[in-house]
Every structure is written in structure tokens, then in C-alpha cells.
Image (cartoon, rainbow, N blue to C red):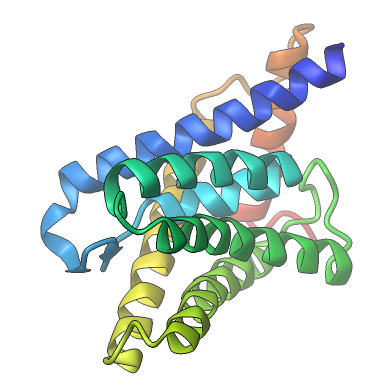
Length: 205
């Protein structure tokens, strides 16, 4: 039951974080839209990457649920096929990057072997994978004309949003206690803080 509760909280937390980041993005960067749903700065991309890095497949499901809600209720209420495709592809891209990191970097659950170079590579890889998946689907359905401009704007938006969120998370984690307490939650956050702190500061070899 404890394990099930943890999965539920991981999925719910990821979904809520994504929805919150999307709301902030719409409020702060509403004038940076290239087309509807594509921004030159897209903060939710950082949540997608962090969510999958921190909680793996739970992050994928959290992102998928949030993506379906947003697509059906806001972005594409009259186009269910586009709504489903957008939610699936947007959730799949960071998870594929996460799985590749597990395979090629032997990424640990505590992220203790996540170096700055690897973190940047994964941010770039996600920023390529997400627009690539979307534009392959666009090409198959014939729903985009300015392929290069659209791809480039999505890449820039995803990369900028991912880097902003990663360094914002770095700042938040810096405010946490330097040592873990006896609390399981605090101890878990300490491990994440310590691992990401090591990565940002290039202390991991």
C-alpha cells in the first residue's frame, strides 16, 4: 500500500507541477508564442525533463494525464486526435531521453552520477526529440507548412524552458537543509538536492 501511495503521489505531483508551470508560462510568456501552443520560452519542458529524471515512468504517466487534460480542455477541444497525439508525444519525448540516460549513462535513482555535461546533453536531447516527434507526426498528417521554422522555435522554446527550470530548481534546492533529518520526506529531498547540487557544481566525476 505504501508503494502504491508513493506512485500516486509521484504521478499527481508531476501532473500538478506541469499544470502549474503551464499556467505560469501562459501568464509570463504569453507574448512569446510562435503559434498556439509553441512558445520561444516553454517552462513546462523543464518539468517534463525533471519529472522523468526524478520519478521515471510515474513522471511519464503524470505528464500524460496532465497533457490530455490540457489538450482536451484548452488547446484542442475540437480535435481529439490532435489532443491525444500532442499529449502522448509530449510525454514520450522526455521518457525516451530518460531511458537512453539509463542505458548509456547508467543513471542512478539518486542522480548522483548526473554531471553538468550529461544534464546539458539530456536537455538538448529532449529539446530535439520533442519537436522531432511532433514534426514527424505533422509530416504524416500534413498539418504543418513551415517545417524548419516551426521545428526551430519549438527546439529553442523547449531548451530555454528546460534550462530555466533546471536552474530554478537548483536555486530552490539550495534553500533546503544541508543535512538530512530523520524524516523520510526530508531525507529524500536531501538526496535529490545533494545529487543535483553535485551535478550543477561539477563535483561528480
